[in-house]
Length: 298
Image (cartoon, rainbow, N blue to C red; front, top):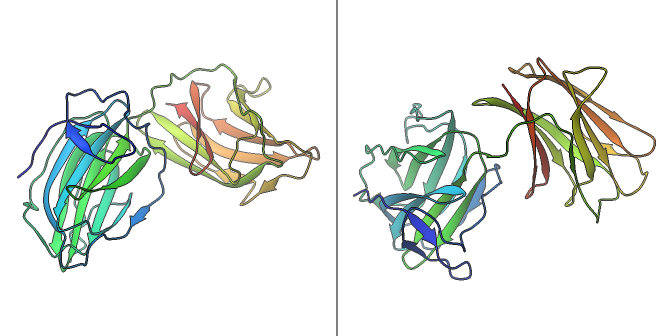
């Protein structure tokens, strides 16, 4: 049976969930920021965990889905990927532009109807449905309003797996210069890669940084080319910057068209993002892993 009611974290030191009102408590967790796959091990032999139900709730900064088990929790993998049918591989559509797939391994049976579809109507969480259960594996899919950060919590008493998906950014778009980074700065600027993606209402540019701390940085439109965004990065020393991957990148999205990277003898780095039109942008500094995110409004 599907049980739908809001959930809130009442203690960080003791992982327990209780039913409360629609607004989370002041001790609620921050919004998750990680987007890479998350893998967890089982807490019980593979013949014991049984999936018995699913709940969902809205928190201040994220939406939560809870998978209830008896006999312990199975191994899991949560990642951005399409939902498919277990044993068939046939794609199963989800409501929303982003699909988050949850794979449980070591679940011999389930008392949950695999054909049930739930539409929570939360800020990020649009839909929950299943790809089936077969040979100890259960697939679930979360249809999301956007590709956002997520985390996975393995909780006990009773055993359950919670998946939190962040609400979409609320920072406004604008054209004013953004400045960030503060001591202690990393010795050198180190860029591990550049990524981009289309989102509802904006394009996203991500600079993956290979340092735990952020360098000094500025983000602003340039004067000579009003549709070009300049991203300047400065480390503590003048040691040469470390840049992985190509220096010229074609993007070709609605607003973001391409990126070029230049490094200088004083250790600073300039990243130039060309856009199709001068419009608002917003900047986010995210950790675990460290990355600089620039959203350009459509």
